Length: 194
Image (cartoon, rainbow, N blue to C red; front, side, top):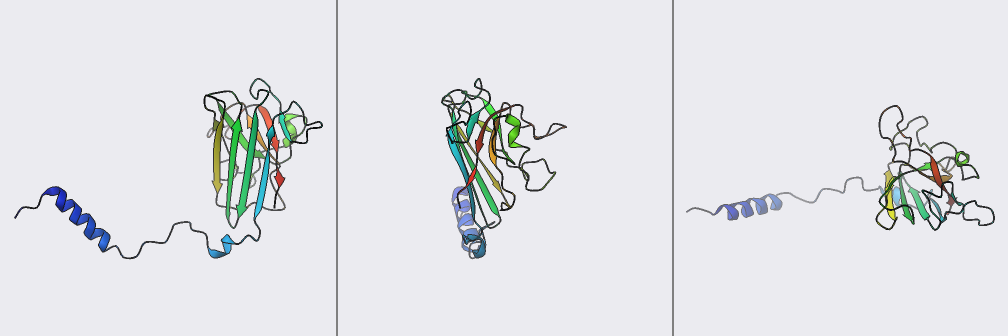
């Protein structure tokens, strides 16, 4: 008796599933201790980018109104617990269909673009997306976009990033200028929430 090919495939698949045993444990599932809120750190910042932070208190400053127009804004949250850190960025009102570089920086925003210091690095001296927090974003037709970065390390409470900086160009991922992304066009100061 000849068995149709599709029936043979179904029987083979069902047999393989039936002999597979219990499901494998989830990969990268946090250990129970990592689910504890002890040591959890949340940083956040948000607001409309102003020409300066004088009197607004938002900590959201535009340095280049051509690339961060009036009305543009950003919101960022970094959550770090156990040995995991997740950072989420949402932007609105930037130029449409444009790719911006974005990174966490070591210091808070200031009146001058360079006041936010160098990139935040988890592993000092390592310029790559595993040590730094790169959040490049491409905007849609309305100038909105979002990005997320995940890392297998926790923030050090004694050395937290101070800001998010949005850059004029995408981040260079290789070569002698790796990690650079052009001029700093906007900055968002981060505050510890917990």
